[in-house]
Length: 206
Image 1: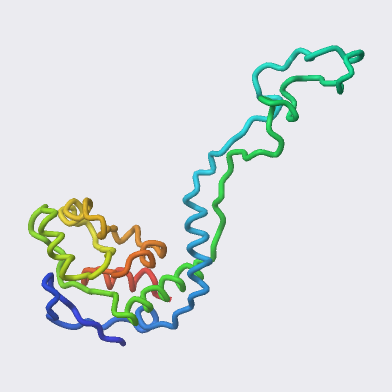
Image 2: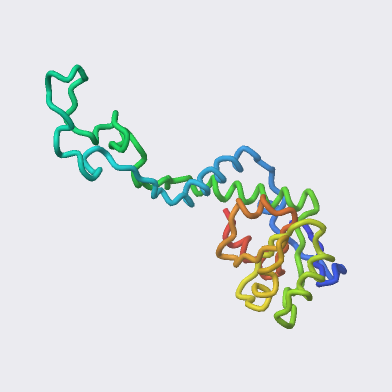
């Protein structure tokens, strides 16, 4: 079992916690990051892009000019794809971009990401994330001490913390149920409350 320090809101070490090696000290398999991020972003796509074919464009029911005698190529409709304002050929249609990704790949990528944070000293475990009040200035002072760059904060139901950091451009609050690889890798520092470590271990346990 690996041992990690526990800090208070002043970034003073107040204790230690034992964590699972296969989650916080695992081999970092970076190739899994690409697979999971691609899957995650694909699932976020709305897939609402749509174009009209020639049968859906308004008008064009009458033949634009007679078949013979004009010297021009014959045309049956002014809404054919070769006309301006006509339908689109093979254009995008509403669709889902969601596809299945093996759960072992997803959990393996998250274990690698957490281990990467631990290895680079970018994982902070806090004894308590209770600010005591809803105040953005207080939250800004706390995270200025905790993290040099931007930070992702993972906690349970903590409404005061969520409201306090939502206007901070370099801090993002995320409920434990929304833990995802994209945000973990996007932010420099990952901040966890002590109970969330056990929640993550329970979710990623083999």
